[in-house]
Image (cartoon, rainbow, N blue to C red; front, side):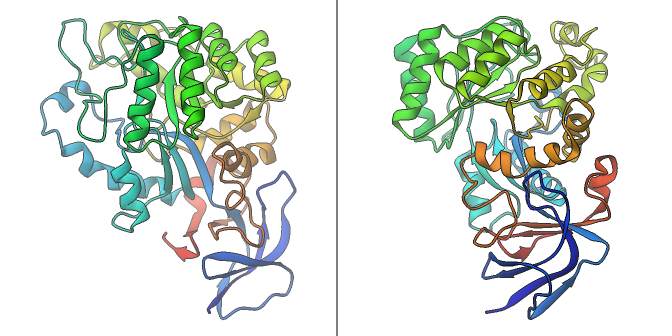
Length: 400
């Protein structure tokens, strides 16, 4: 059995510990040793480099592309978007992101294609689609009465619209039947849907309770898109695993999240395109109006989350911005309440814990899957990190 030795580098092990001089030995897709003076058959010279665990993005849309506008999508063949996805997979992998939680758009077929080696990309959990009330964030009916081409149902990709206790229970089961690893819901309105308000709560409390309990019966967690405080609190009371975005997080909702142990996935990078979107004439005027004068409230939410001591995992919401910007999230976290070590922890072991994969991923330690990222220079210089990732190893094999 070949022993691959990563020699002479500094190791960030996924915890908030400082960098340490150490060698890493990988054998048969697993980390077998970490420490000084180790040996191996194949040697990777890591002098002047840093070694990180494979990074995570726990809120991404791999089948979406920021540059696509609604008119373009409406007037091209339905299957075209599928053929863009391999590029998005590789763009994500080149950033050192070896594991993702796709928050809508990727189906079980994409997950399996990566698992089987048909496509090269990060391993993934998929939500398939997002459960939404009628008129909510995933209701594709346009003001004209037409249907948006955004998330059209097809075999293995059901509509996410559902209402009432019985309706949401059936929809959870339907999405799990389609292969969902996690249930994604919208407990508030959103920014890219023309007929709703991000501050308004969506789904009644009893509907949310039913979603979470039905998912739990079938061994699934729930992630909830939520911008406004009431949408956050209803979802937390229902028992969701994580709040996605939390844009207008306030002290009351933060306290409730802390009490219930709810994770925050802040997706701060999604705000990097706010100003551009506010002036994008390809968007409906109702959508542009939501971005106008919005500013960056997610910065305040992140600072409040850090101050409150919430559990935070890195997630970005790519393709609300171009794939490849994902590591901006580390910079934003480090500039808004987190230390650099906390930010990188949020993108490694903390994210693995959110996804239930911390027993085998998220840190560099013996027995874990050998996802290793080789970085030239300082891994905490986040502004230039994406340009300094030299090698990416997944399951003990070099993929970048």
